Length: 142
Ligand SMILES: [Zn+2]
Image (cartoon, rainbow, N blue to C red; front, side, top):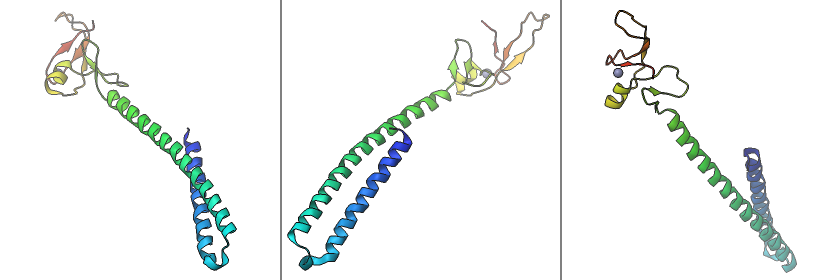
């Protein structure tokens, strides 16, 4: 059930409850003397019909709430997964972040430390790679 549908179900259930309360209120206003047995019986039949409908509406609303709860739990799990760095076999990445994190810092100290790009240096015999300014680890592309 989508949101507008469940909101509509709640509104109609509430209307039904209000109608039932009005029925009982009118019954009390009339008093015992004015009320004959037929009127009383008819009002009770109406009231019972309404209550049965309210009960079935509440059962479907309960199902809607349970579905929403499941949806919330699954979205929460997804969100937690999204904030967790993913290891590519060499370095860690966060979804949506183009700069990776240092494996050594993350695995040793749970430190999410962005790596820097170290330019190639022919005199040292190094090609361009990721470099950690925190622990000085180098990560070469595989
Ligand atoms: Zn590091």
